[in-house]
Length: 293
Image 1 (cartoon, helix red, strand yellow):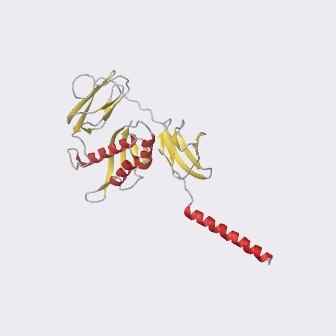
Image 2 (tube, rainbow, N blue to C red):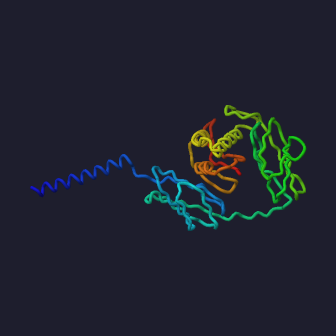
Image 3 (cartoon, rainbow, N blue to C red):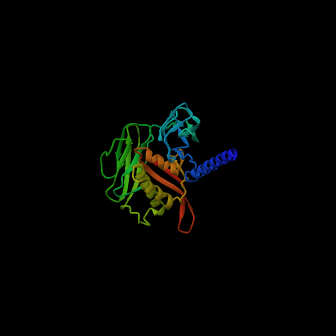
């Protein structure tokens, strides 16, 4: 009799324990790591962002494959040597995720010291701050922004706004250049999101709207509002659209926007997009090209 009672007690404990484990797993499903790195290909010594969004996480160990590590939820890292690195993240000493990154040496560009150019948007809106960058092997610059005679700036990068619509001829000279760099800029009346057509066409309006929203993210404005506005309106809800930054680095759209959120002081210079028609009056961005500083 005692033996039967003992067997029943053991059976009851086993069944109760199994049910408890099943109930806990049903209410609290097994966690998975949700982590991203800010780039999949970067040049040597270029910092990239890393961030983990795993729910209820309390400890992190990032192993970057070059002998260095970090114990924070998010941060920045750079590599001193080119190569492929396998990044391992351990969350709460039990959950892991592996990510790969390609690090390359930037090619050395040999150019004629006399040749200088201007990098900047071809159009803008009245009252909008626009970024222009001097390109060339020099350190002394003289900008004329087309609003009158004289030198408007002597810096390599110029942030400028125009108070009146029109066409402006920008001139850039350097100490060693034989000829000035010339740049034609068109300034349109103030932009409103309700605009449907204008002189530069719908595509330029789309690119400009994307640039405005990306700059808001970079400036620390509401991330979800601006990010999902872009994803839903222009990317057909695809968060993995590739983004090319400055013609070199390629990232997916979500990781790129997360990087903007974490990297302070980024200025979006210009945006262009490759689009695919999905209906008579609709299209989706398939690839985004961004120039930033």
